[in-house]
Image 1: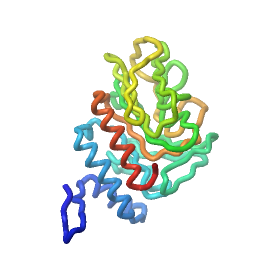
Image 2: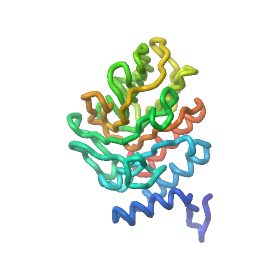
Image 3: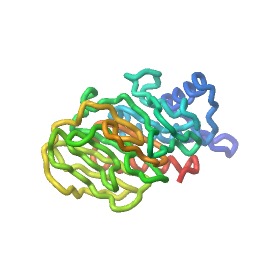
Length: 259
């Protein structure tokens, strides 16, 4: 809800957004700017507004400009592995534009194992990025048990020996969101254009026993030099929900001038 006070716009903040802002202040000692606070509230209230908040397992908004403020999973603001907060590894740049890898060592371990949290072959995965090779924005596994967005210009799923399923994007994008359900055709949203095309069939039953990495498909010795401004891991979503998630996460970056 937006309130007016003597002609000035005031935002009635969501309680979860307020908690995120408070913990970053109290634990990390970082006072978020007004645009940063609006950014947090835009994402949280927006995802609640489209009815997907309860589907989300991990949400990383990368706000505050430091490794400490960028580690938090906004769905569970505990500093613990089982809260899926990120442990940063290798060489990374943390600033107000988000996080940027070096393409050699820099990554974030989310500690989130899709099979362990019941996602398996029904998952939504995505990120917003506007700089770098974008090879791996977020991913897990290697070889015949892997999933990632992106992988060399496509979203990629190859589980338990099934045929590779690549969903071609064919262009550099700012938002790449991928929803996969073993019972239905997957779909990809990139800059609000939906793509259903898959190159091969298969019957995946779950991905490998590894955790998701940011800027690296954990389990594979490959890293990205992309700059990432947000990431999300969630239960499988509908096409409309995926489109709306992509819109919220992508447009939110404009609040911070990250476009």
